Image (tube, rainbow, N blue to C red; front, side):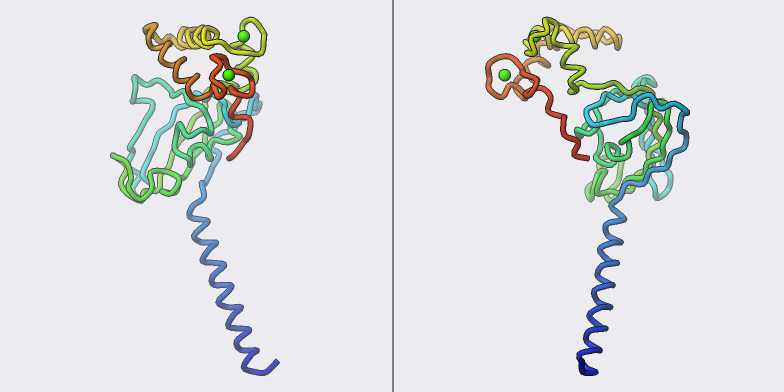
Length: 217
Ligand SMILES: [Ca+2]
Ligand SMILES: [Ca+2]
C-alpha cells in the first residue's frame, strides 16, 4: 500500500466513523427513554399489545417543565382507559408503556418524532420533547385478545354476531358506569363491523376480529 493510498484509507475510516456516530446520535435522539420510578413486588400481568389499560398520566414539556396535561385534574380526575399499541395514544407512549405492570410508575421521555412532531399540537409547541409521569392502575386483556373474543361469543359458536358485540359493549359501559343511548351502541357496532367484517357476511370470525395478534412494537 502506497503512503497516499494508506492516508486515504485512514481518512476514509475517519469519515466512516464520523458518519456512523452521526447516525447513532440521530437515532438515539429518536428513542423513548424509560425510567421506572416504582415497581410493585408482584407483577400480575405485563402490558402487551391490544391490552386495555387504565392509567393516570401527567404530561410535561422537557425544555421548561411546563405541565400541559394532567389526568388527575382533567375529566373529573378519572384515569384514562385506552388500548395499548394501536395508536390511541402517541407512538412514544405506546412504546414507553410496553411490559409495564399494574401499579408500576414510570417516567417516559418522548422525542418530538414520536410525539407531536415538527408541527406540535396545541398546547404542545413544535418540536417538543415530552415527559410523561405514568401510573398504571389496571391491565385487562383485550378488547382484541382471544380472551375477549370468547367472552363476547355468548353462544360459543366461534362467530360474533352484531347482537353479541352490542351486548358486550353494554356490559362494558355498565362496568365503567357510563350511560349511553341505544343509538350509540348501534353506531359503535356498525363501525366495528365496517372495519373488521372483511367478507361482509354480517358476522366476525376469530380471524377477522383478532387483528392485534402480532406485536409490532
Ligand atoms: Ca357467537
Ligand atoms: Ca365476516
